[in-house]
Image (cartoon, rainbow, N blue to C red; front, side, top):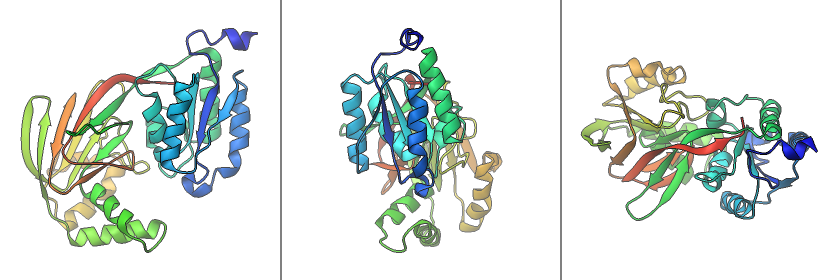
Length: 308
């Protein structure tokens, strides 16, 4: 009976689980039965959602929340977490990200262990204890009514351009396609003209890198916005100015430690709302393709409740 009464502070209802078996190139595929069994130890029914595409995954999460799920758990990388977040953002349904992908930035930046079994242990304990803590999300909107939530980082510079190039390429397959896209775009590298509005402050600048972070890292541990805090109600904006190819390649490894912000061509800002525009740029959020510029990004305090 204790398992029933311990959930006073969380919605009742089953735990819905979204799992991406191909996350992290499938290296955690065999773990899923063990993770589901561990989650069942919280004393709630556990329901595995069925989906064969990112669109289906997002729709399944939204349907589960609408049908009265008491919690949503996403087993996968940042892409899987991104789909699940669209369903729980702004609701009372608590969320648990289980890092099982190539990039697990949101889960790790919000304090979950990098090991999936350990992360499920944290989530199960929180479910059993009826415990969830609020964390901010960023809300991305477009002039024509487009709307997405994200937890980690929006990329709108060189990295977004490389992603867009890689997604258009049919060959080669796998990680080498991304490497080739980097080479192609490095050869074409030029600063773009950006218009930035940070709360009420306007900036026009030439830049190669632009990132808007709710959390610090993207791309599997690159600390592009090293001081971003997903509980401070603010967005961190990091802009890398007129880099040439050689300087960019020298600075890029420093992003893993977050020391690139000390470079004289890098500027960092903080704001509650960010309006961003430049010609010919498609944004990526949590590694997923989002909207063409212009966009507006707002920090939304306590937009999601994490099982932690």
